[in-house]
Image (cartoon, rainbow, N blue to C red):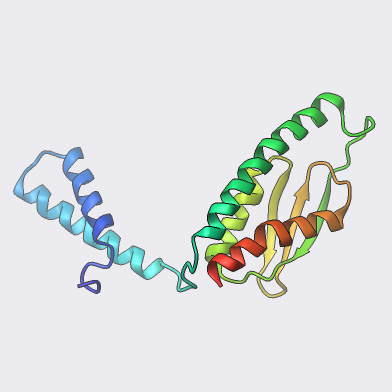
Amino acid sequence: MTRLVPHPLLSLVLMLVWLLLTRLSPGNLVLGLAVGLLAGWSFARLEPEGKRLRSLRPLIRLMAIVSQDILRSNLAVARLILRGGQHGRRHSAFVEIPLRLTDPAPLALLAMVITATPGTAWIAYDKDSGILLLHVFDMVEGSDWSRLIRDRYEALLLEAFA
């Protein structure tokens, strides 16, 4: 059954949206069903093979940590902008961080966490070397950022998906 309809909920929702956008008729019902099934099959072909979620508890802890970090970073970045940086100077920089993550799903989550945190931006990731290039709005110490990303975020993602 999953081979015929790999994503039944997606197909159903798309069919219902199609019917909401058009008049209800047998032809539109068949066309909506076709659109839903084609989208489900396409999504199944695009879906990456990867590790499955092993534990939800580390992701809940990660969500709590990230929420605190985002709040703290918002305040710190606002303070830096208003005061012009620590001691009147602000120093932006790039940091290379070696990552242990290789699976696309946890890497995508890490990218969202880093980019959602004010003052940091995920610039590039080299799949071959496992190096993340991170931009930091106010650089104090590069090794602190490596330790923060590895120990605070990546460790929880490895625990959740390993």
